[in-house]
Image (tube, rainbow, N blue to C red; front, side, top):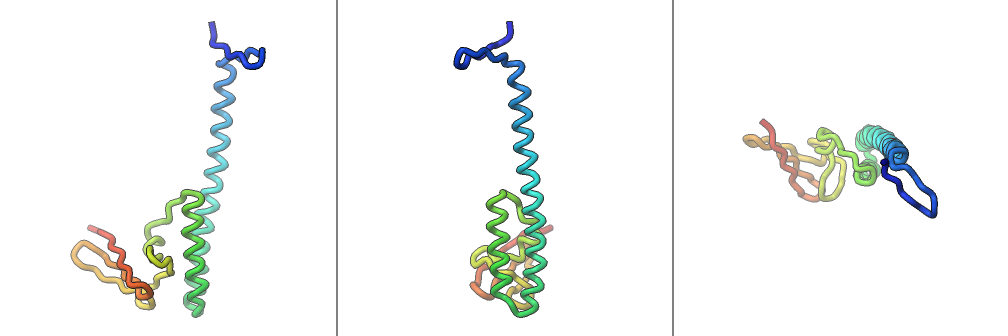
Amino acid sequence: MPLVVVLDKTEINIKILIPIIKMRSKQKYSVKDEYKEIALGRIHELFKQADIQFHDNEKELANRYMYLVRRLAMKYKVKIPSELKRQICKKCLHYLVAGENARVRTTGKVIVYSCKDCGHQNRIGYK
C-alpha cells in the first residue's frame, strides 16, 4: 500500500509528489547556476575595466570596481579566481598593481603582496 498524505480532505499519493519536488529543486538550482555564471562574467569584466581605469589615472573608480567585485562575489557566493583575488587588497579593497601601489616580494616558499595604500600584507604560499 503506497504512502498517502491527507491535506484538507484531499489524498495525495507520495510517489506522485516526490518527482514533482525533485523537479522543482532542479529548476531552482539551474537558475542559481545561471546567476553565478553571470556574476562571474561580470567580475571578469569589472577587473578589465579596473585595469583600464587604473592606467588612465582614475584610481578611485578602479577601487570602486574592486568593491563591487567583492560584493558580487559575496551576494552570489562565487569564488573570485585566485589570480584575480591577488589584485585586491583584503583590508582596504583597493585594486593592486605591482610596482604602482603594491610591492611583491618572494621569500622562500611565500609570495608577499604589500599594499602601499594601507600597508596590509597578503602572504600566499607556493611550491
